[in-house]
Image 1 (cartoon, rainbow over the protein chains, first blue to last red):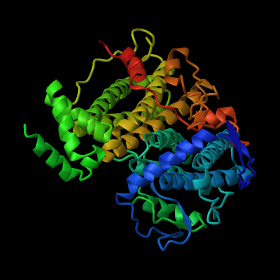
Image 2 (image 1 turned 60 degrees about the horizontal axis):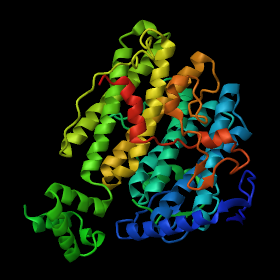
Image 3 (image 1 turned 90 degrees about the horizontal axis):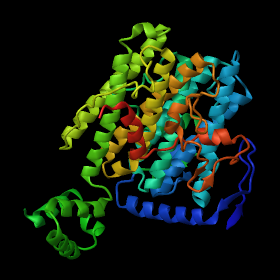
Image 4 (image 1 turned 30 degrees about the vertical axis):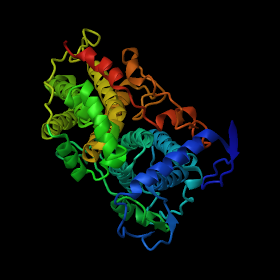
Length: 235
Length: 270
């Protein structure tokens, strides 16, 4: 019933060889294939997006259809998990016990999201991305929290913008389960930056952000060293 | 009613309608058979349902369901902020005012979306925020006020999540609903932080741990949040840092329309 699957050890030393139900992987691949078939009839051609992503066919391929959207989410979760791993490894000066505790929670959530996508995507998962946080001063509370706010607001807007490209209802449901947790993180971080600013990014209709993959990669690209081929992403 | 004309119109909007429905000939044959058995709007509705999974009527029903919840929240915050002496700090009053402004904007936005989609917005119900006496001091006791606010926000997040799949046929509406959904989650996180501070209960976090609530009366809002398995993947232990608590916190769970209405109806005067 269950098979063992070997994973490479991730940047923070996660275990390998975690059991996973075989039947699920097959079902997933079947759905992913269906999604690809549906999406490939639509307009998924993308234009050039920014820093470290490519449109000339080189770089890491995200796949097509629902797989490309899930890999897109996997890439963002890798980025967030790596960021908070560093935050907890080298806490900013003057960090309170309360902040340390809740930021550790956030790190753990992002690792859970990252490892979930790695498992769900199975053989379709992209490689571990190399990140570059050299522009962030991890000793400074202001700098760390400003970066965290950027990552969280961007993550929420990325999921909100990508929902309409998902063709399998179950995957839309999963994205929904994750995005509200990212929004909870965003609210907490925003309140740390400026008390009461938990949702001050809402527009006049009371709506949160929604960004295209191109806009998201343009903003996140500076922190991602690995070249990603964005050709197959919906725009 | 000219049936051929209806399908020609649909074909203009969606060139693949016949692919979705098998062949044109079969569609008309099937449609004729259904037509013999039932009224035309029903027949057309079920054919569209076959093509897209969901009909525009389903989308309108979700929007009206959401509107009911937004009426509930907007009315609650509007009433709450008139009791200024209840709030221990200006920051608390300001937070309620901010959230109330968003909920009122959501009401207006949804009414407009429903009208422009050819639907009719439901009327605002009459509310009883004491829930028949269960929260009798809701507007005289700050702790109860926050309890009800947290229940409304966390329910709202679960309600939108539960309806997302129904909205897939309309990408514009889906995106807007997702944008409301994550704002509700931000509200929930802030109210939970306010309660963490005012109760001193560190088990109350901006995110939901297991199905924990410190107020037994609000347990139906949290039942199901203890789920540790997503798409057949067990999240607990997926990495060394991912404890059972972290696993349940990192995914929010949807709530069915029926379960949401069972909660909301406690506050609606029938």
